[in-house]
Each structure stands twice: as C-alpha cells, then as structure tokens.
Image (cartoon, rainbow over all chains, first blue to last red; front, side, top):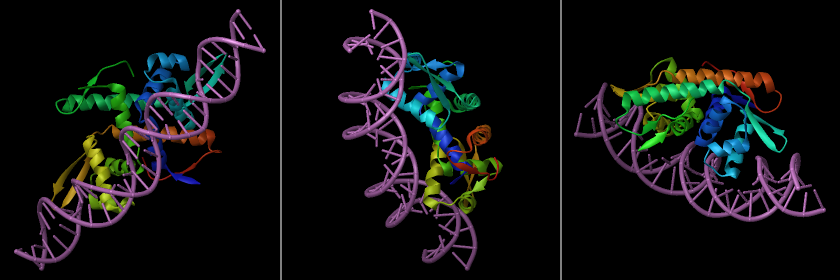
Length: 111
Length: 111
DNA sequence: ACACCACTTGCAAACATCTTCAAGTCGTGG
DNA sequence: CCACGACTTGAAGATGTTTGCAAGTGGTGT
C-alpha cells in the first residue's frame, strides 16, 4: 500500500496538532522523561497522557523503555525540534504583525 | 484573552493536518494560484477547496485578492515552506529506517 | 504473598472536523 | 440586463478525536 507524500505530511502534522502532544515533545526534546515526570509538568489525567503518548508512539515520534518501575520516553526523531522552532518563529512573526486582533500569546519556556 | 504558546503551536499544526491543505500550501509556495488553477491540480470538489482555503485564511496562512473574475491566493507566511521541507526530511528518514513495516511513500513533486 | 506505585487499555459520551449539496454573491462579456 | 463562470457560504450527515472513568498489568519493597 502506497501513500502519497503530501498525505504522510498531513498525518505528521496532525500528530503534532494537540497541545498535550506539543508539550510532551517540548519536554522530551530537552531530555528524556519518565511518565510521572511528564505528569508533573503537564496538567492532564494520567490516562489521557498515556493516550497521547500512545499516539506519538504509533507514529514513531517517540520511543519508550522500561527502567525499573518507570517508563522512560525519548524523541526518536530529533528534527521534531526544528519543527517546533520554526512554528515558534512563525507565531512570533504573527503576533508582531497582527497582535491587535485575535489572541495574544504568553511567552512561555523554550523551544 | 491570552493563549499559551504551546496551544498556538498545536493550532498551527492542526491547520496543516489535512492533505488538501498541504497540497494547497505546496502549490502556493511555488507561486500564487487562482482557485481554478488549484482546482486543476487538487482532486476535490470546488466547495471543499473553498472550505479548506477558508481554514487557511482564518489562520492567516494565506491571503487572497480578487483579480478580475478570479480570486488569487498567496502564502502570507513564507516560513511555511520550511515546515514542509522539515516534514519531508523527517518522512524520508522514517522510510529509510523502517520502510519494511507500515506504509510506503510515493515520491511526488517537491517540496 | 501482599500492597503499592507507575502506567496502560477499553470504552462511551462529548466534541470537532470533513464532505457534499444546494443556494448565494460578484464580476464580465454579450 | 441577463447569463455565465468563478467562488463562497450554510447546513447536515458521516467520520474521527478527545477525555475521563473504571479496570487491568507489571515491577518493587516489605
């Protein structure tokens, strides 16, 4: 079965199209995290976090391994960081140009 | 009203998370196109195309202007091209590594 | 063996997105 | 001014996503 590239791209971006998944990737691109560490920094239910991690695992954006009683996640595609950085740049440009109408942005931690 | 950056990023990626919208942005990042030109290259109904263009307009990724009887669209955020290129790179890496299981990709036109 | 974390899974309700049809707007040429 | 081509809009059904709860697995310390 053969998927056109533009459709694969759409699926890649769709995977990134969720606030919790963005947070996860931001944190993991700093360093590996165990699930309970992510849970401390992202304000969602454990089962929800698990679901979102499953989505990222299915699309091979992260991998997990057990370490004692914890499960540690890491990004498997380092270029994801670039995607996040470009997105940040685009959004900065957008507030600069048209900060008057629409939503303002809070500048939170990198990237 | 203030939106955290990670949520704005998620919305940006969600906007990109649709095959037709990817195709549109690919074509527009080559050059401006009138709607009927897009219609020739993207296999969807006119009204559907219009809906997808409306999504891109709402998020300020494209702008349109009337030129005689046509409506011409252009990308308003040039960095979108970078996002598409990074996505392409990521996907190439993925087929290289694990082309055996999951979907194969057809290499279609740039970017 | 038991209790306890640390996670994951299944599932159903709530919510959002996608697609198409029918109807509507706006210029242009006859 | 009327008809046509070029688009856009509204609305509704189908489809997909998100969320939370309850239940389940697996490892660790006692």
